Image (cartoon, rainbow, N blue to C red; front, side, top):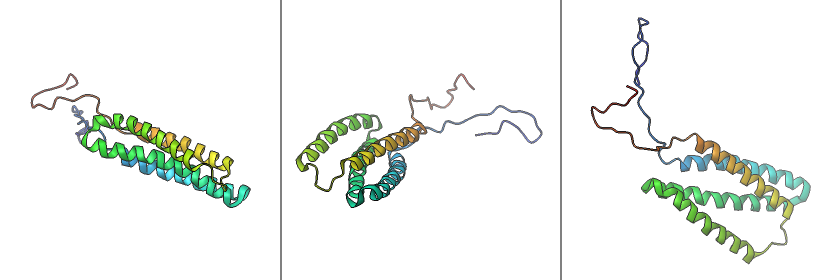
Length: 162
């Protein structure tokens, strides 16, 4: 990138080089989501400990943990598929979502509700996890650069903005 001003104060035309798309944003999104969501689950678990004791604590960690595992799988699939086939990442997300939804539902139906489970704190932690994870995911994703079309890179090709 060149500066539009010279030392003498005279203005020269500037040329801004494109930076290109964000390379594999999924791990960065995952790390940020984990930081915020795990922090929220710990906070809910500590609060639940005061109101419901050990069962509230375990229930909060169980509810939040299920959500965290559910969404982590998606972002890891996006990372590994996106490295080899960036355009296929969204399709992989859709397929993974269906498989995860059916798998988690079957797991929860099979194991049932443990005796120690406090449904209120399970729900509060799970809901807080979903809301925080989705908000962080949208915010971090909105700050990535997505390449929508290919720019001509041939020598001598100029754009209308030169």
